[in-house]
Image (cartoon, rainbow, N blue to C red; front, side, top):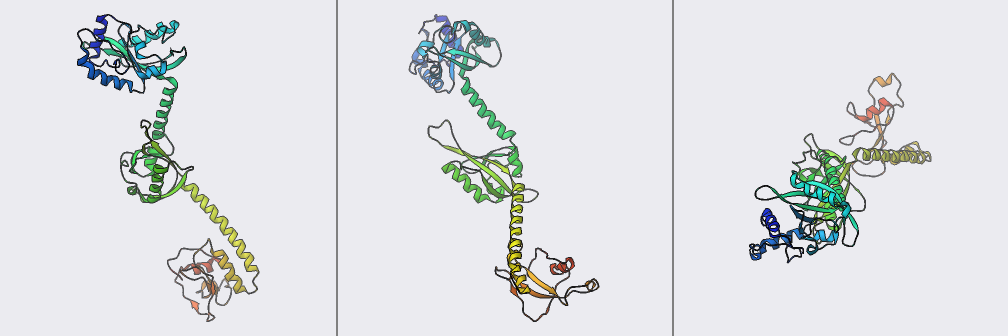
Length: 411
């Protein structure tokens, strides 16, 4: 360690008012104590602050008003290779931490913060002990004494690529929770929303703050069990290999809404813990209800078309018209309805004049009501079926074709 004059040491010691500890001899950093400053009185505080500084993720160094290095923590040693014993006490950075050609500019920018408000951010190329160069980003601020006058500078720095990675992570997180066009929810280990972006809040039919800490069952009336099961699986096993489509019913002020959310899940663990301790689950989802409905309708249409084609081919092989009708009905019923009947008009086809009077229909065949099974021919009594006005069977006569409708009971 390079010795300094007593006034310089004592002045800077007073300016930090007991915070001058990264130079603890026990922790590997170095400090200077004046002759009237017993080490015993400050040892406890020095050891504590030294431990705090050496435990920082960022490298830290400090200079007094004359540019002499007074503090140097372990992260600074890791990045540059210079130990605290080698760094503390040096005047300036020239020749060892900065190239001589760059030293004047670098030191000038660092020490200029003593006469500027707030913090300043710079990027410098520093030298490592083995002769290499590393680009660092620094944040520096003035250290002021009891009288408010500048007494030195502290400087925290980290490698630029590490800082950029951190800034990108923070920027990504902020963008996801502010500007993302899909829902983003941070669910805690109790399966309750901890952070929700605006898109997710709208999808859940509530505000961003009112949703926090509430059980999912208060937000969803259906699909809660499936969603909570997925979240518990992610907490225990990790993220699934592909997105999952979850159908839910959202409780909203304007009524319940059935929605399909394509969801991705990520298990979140603390980067500071030695062992992975789950903090919760990141849940990202996108509303694909309309696309799924279109897909389902197209699939149903294809199925119905195939069934009608099969029904026509099967009916064409029947010699008996009544049998052909029931066979066609059995094939065509799947995908169209749960129950069907075939009636015939008494007296044959209607003429325009006959259509003006009451229509009498006789049951020919029907499928079992309330249970699956093949259609059966009706008895031969030929008794007309009584239908109320507006019944779908009467509408079929008016339209001269089949009709599909929702009915509360069997005709």
